[in-house]
Image (cartoon, rainbow, N blue to C red; front, side, top):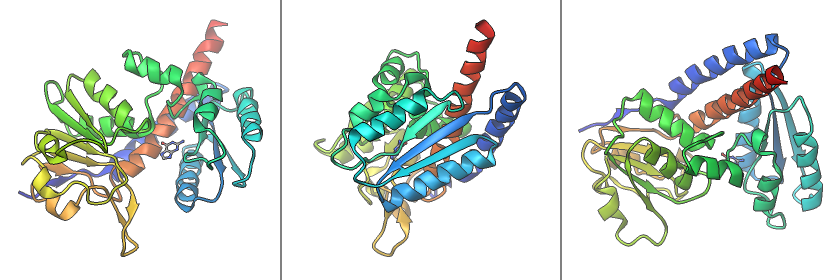
Length: 288
Ligand code: GUN
């Protein structure tokens, strides 16, 4: 079997265009959606991600602010910037790019972001809302994966969904979103015994570990939908995912490529979350 390739770039483009239309009507109503992206340090991958996020905002007609700080910025100085953005009425979404330098506690930074501007959905208030089935913001990458599965008409009710990687950014919120759709969810982590025994049962397999090649074709159930969240730089300098694409695409029914799969969807969903934050502000104004 040769898997159908799920084109994340095309779907992301469509979602970005829809976000641009919503942004235009918000702007006409006097609220231009605004996103602030904060980058601390010189991590090359983070620089690329942040640049792409800001460019996507500008293309969709958003107000966007990019703040870059040196790696030795103090935690208190960063918290001061976050507090200022919390109070800035032109900003509806705040994203502090992770990872942060070691001397800064990411948890403290995330908890300082106003929950109603936390377009990453990482604040404990938003994680709790997601867990209890009342999400305000869904974290962008898992949200993008759900959009891809819906677009591909993947049946989730009663399906076996296996997630490899239990991070706060992807694995855990992914589990909550799949569970909410009625999937039976298995969340594997780095201590999981016999990973292949789990992955081979998966109708839907989501892999988000940052370890290239952790899933190979022999670990995939024939006909499964395989979603590869990894973005790694291979020894040949090319981008690759966490899934061995060559062998997995021989077995899977559908699979996301890297690049051009989940990556573009993350950015598209960031725009959606920012538009939603601005729309909520407009609604609040209407009530006042
Ligand atoms: N680093 C890797 N992915 C993400 C993300 O979705 N949001 C933020 N803020 N940092 C990240």
